[in-house]
Amino acid sequence: MDDFRFPKSERMTHKRDIELVFASGSTIKKTPVLLKYCWKTDATEGVKVLIVAPKRQHRHAVTRNKLKRRMRELFRLHKSSLKILTTGANKTLLLAVIYQGNASVPFKQLETQYRAAIMLLQAPK
Image 1 (cartoon, rainbow, N blue to C red):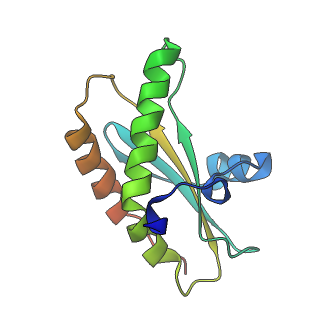
Image 2 (tube, rainbow, N blue to C red):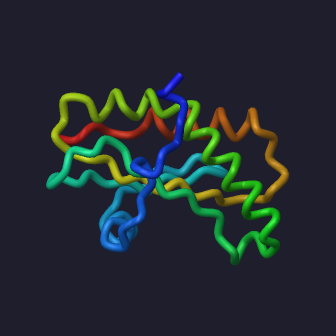
């Protein structure tokens, strides 16, 4: 049951990591999910995640918080598939999950698009 937690050690909190992902990261888009990711070679921490719901698209904080809760839940449920990518590699996956689209997407559809985007992630070389 420990594998379904979302501890602080899996959250991307350092500004330099966030800037690295947005400056030089690769992009995968499966509407309404946008993944920006890159591999960090100087650490072996597994997966670090940043969840984003842009204020420009979703004006109300209640809506943004709801979307971020959904995205955290998706990550929490499907992080085992991400950990498979990082095993054996001496690198850390820095992943930004960005919600783009309207707020009326059902959870099942969101889950389908998220899983499709995760399957397109490429292992480090």
